[in-house]
Amino acid sequence: MENEIHSQLSILNSQLFFTMNFPIDKLRSLPTPLYYYDVELLRRTAQAAKTEADRYGYHVHYALKANANAPLLRILSGMGIGADCVSGAEVQRAIDCGFAPQSIAFAGVGKRDDEINLGIDHGIFTFNCESEQELEVINELAKAKGKVAQVALRINPEVDAHTHAHITTGTAENKFGINLWQLNEVAKKATQMSHLKLISIHFHIGSQITEVEPFIELCKKVNELQAQLEKIGVTVEHVNVGGGLGVEYSNPDEHLIPDFAGYFSAINKNIQLRAGQKLHVELGRSIAAQCGALITKCLYVKELQKKNFVIVDAGFTDLIRPALYGAHHRIENLTSASTEKKSYDVVGPICESSDTFDKNIALPHTQRGDLLAIRTAGAYGEVMASQYNLRTLPKAYYSDKI
Image (cartoon, rainbow, N blue to C red; front, side):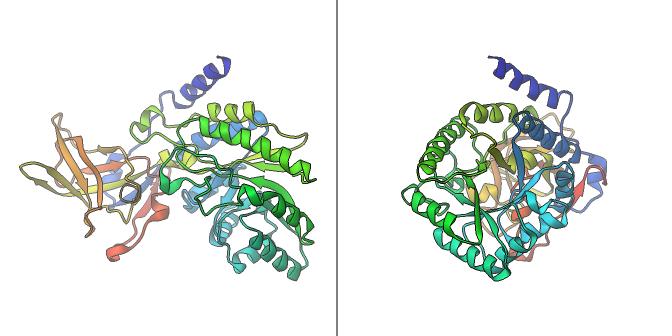
């Protein structure tokens, strides 16, 4: 009960009298579509995560794959947060934006030699390795440089995250990680490679996880696997339980800052760390999602007998999640003064039927020129944008510089 109360108070205190800031008059003068970031909300969210992690001595790494926008990264690196990268370009971006190389974890099932060499040259915290062959390649490349690379074994724990099939990563059917049946053999070989230092075990079970049970199940599996590895003489200094904490898409203003208190409390209650062992988490969406919105302008309204369309100037090239995952984002008309509400399908200009942001949603009476905000687009929005149909990539604007 005490932890539940603490969790609730943490959320209330972090969000009291605070909503996402939309400077509508300034947004009217900017070319759309555009990405808008409330940097104060980003700071509050990151600080909430860091405060709860610090309570237990845990280390937070921000997952650049959620949003690699440089000004946002500089804010996060300045707060003493580490980085979680899945490409060489992300490693370089993290370093360029002020993240200490010793705080960078480099994951990914298919690391190229040049990307590995980049990490070795900078002396990054760990390579999260996903196969025996990858360990061999890193060992060879480190040997050629006369260096020792720090590695973690990314283990597939066979934990179902109960999330969308496209973003689950921790079951036997996924391409990620070292499978349980081969773990002992791979771990032994890793300790025998002369230019590797095995310092960590790493896990990641999926993304947009909105229940605490999968994290509890993961912690219990970590406990079992630590005991298993110790029986063959393998011990590690660090445990990395990945990320995956979800956010509220339907009513973002009610839950602008995720329940980091509940998340870290659940980990602390269920993980069994060894003396001196350090725990790491990799949070992306839960830090960046709510601070961003895709701002788009209504180009046309098409009213038919059975359906009304709001046709906007943003498309799935700018926010692909609804088309790719069937994901839902709250859509708000920022400029309509009407109290009358109508049902609309909000669609983009791309020559694909899947270029639909949402269907049958209630909006105030909408007309040409109205500005709409597609909320919770700070994660997997700008970073996944494309130029299909030769569209120009939208620009990003920030609440402290607009």
